[in-house]
Image (cartoon, rainbow, N blue to C red):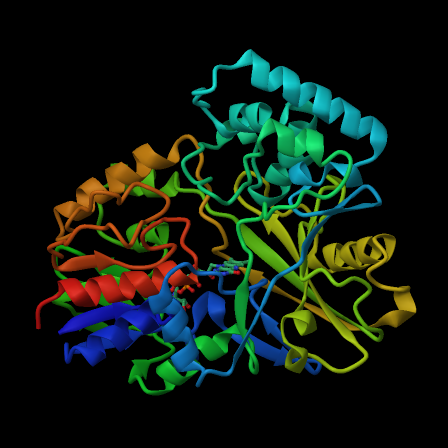
Amino acid sequence: MYTILGAGLAGLSTAHHLQQKGIAFRIFEAKAHGGGHVHSEERDGFIWDEGPHVSFTKYAYVREYFAANCNQAYQEFAPVPSNYASGNWIPHPAQANMYAVPEALREACIADVKVARSRQPKNFIANNYQEWIDYAFGETFAEKFAGVYTRKYWTTDPENLTTDWIGKRIYFPELSDMTDSASGPLEKQTHYISSVRYPQEGGYYSYIRDVESQLNITYNHKLTAISFERKEIIFEHGAHISFDKLISTLPLPLLIGCSDAPLPVKAAAKQLRCSSVLIINVVANHPAKVDAHWIYVYDEAFYSTRINFTELLSASNGITGQTGIQVEVYFSDYHPVNHQVEMIEKEVIRELIIMGLIADQESVSSYHSKWVDWANVIFDILRKEAQETVFKWLATQGLAREDDDLEPMTEWDTKPIWQPGSLMLAGRFAQWKYYWTDDCVMRARYIADNLEK
Ligand SMILES: Cc1cc2nc3c(=O)[nH]c(=O)nc-3n(C[C@H](O)[C@H](O)[C@H](O)COP(=O)(O)OP(=O)(O)OC[C@H]3O[C@@H](n4cnc5c(N)ncnc54)[C@H](O)[C@@H]3O)c2cc1C
């Protein structure tokens, strides 16, 4: 019997895949519902996801899985991301749309990127993210755009980040992309997401809601202690269970922190940094002022970091004639919360008015906010060594190491067969990876495929 901890997307899809193979399991979840980060809530007449969620997977398996789970009721469209920088609207990615950058800044950026590219050999390997952005974009663009956004979204300086998480997520421009785009849009796709799918009804949660309803989940069971030695779990209200084979989708630092791991392992787990996000959901009594599905904000003085419009993802998420604006504000140990939430909410509304996304204060019908504790794993310089210490110890407790378990991403098409141990990790925060929702589903399938009955 497998014990699955957590009923987010990784836990739910793992349970579902095990069920399909006839493998016995039980699943425990802290909250009164599943979905984790893909849960959607209805409030003030709008459906709100936990930050913008769209599916842009390259895996046909996941496209079919999500489509089947929502009875084929999804829509597919080319997303329009945009950038806001000091009063300017710049198509995304800005480094390939230089024509929209104010002239003086544009000239400085282009002069700098030429210098940056000529200074380094073609096979230049950056030691950290700061070196990467300086080389990719030149120092001015790196500071005014990528550097500012890094401090807001990743909550730390680019020098403190590695480069192993970048992949295709950030467009590395040809020098000609920056120079040619100075005079107008390029005739090629430069954003890594060209098409997305989103459920027609009920928000992103509709991709897994039906699966959840068919599983026998033990809700309101928050793990507060675990002994790997005694193979025992204690839940918040005092219930104890023993386990034989365990699949954890809980955040790795949390799991280790309340376990009987030795102190140096706990210390290493504490070094694993993750951001948290304050999501501020605002309803305005007029339609969206822009057609961008989401916006990256480069003003360092603004709390607003990323903004999306829930009714633009699906009209059924909102009320005709109104807009549901969702703003993400990031914090972490590197950038702790510095003000009361009420003050941040008011400030964010002021920023939305300055950006022209809300007509005026009187147009705000309602607002509320939500804390999401685990948002993005921060791939800082200390991460890999700390994670290795944790995994090395977990390997003594039944974890079968994998060839890529310290890498931020997984290439599922080429991942070799694996012999799981009695302890498995699944999902973004359990494996401590830069996983999207498709990775969580692929992980579930991979675990089920590699398990014997
Ligand atoms: C703001 C934001 C935007 C995103 N946008 C996208 C996107 O556009 N597209 C995309 O594909 N992905 C996106 N993602 C990533 C995606 O949300 C995650 O990869 C995925 O939802 C992670 O699922 P999970 O099951 O691994 O973790 P979680 O969703 O965190 O699930 C873990 C579960 O464990 C439960 N739990 C926690 N602690 C305990 C405990 N002590 N005891 C019992 N249960 C516990 C939680 O309640 C939760 O249900 C985004 C993420 C964020 C934060």
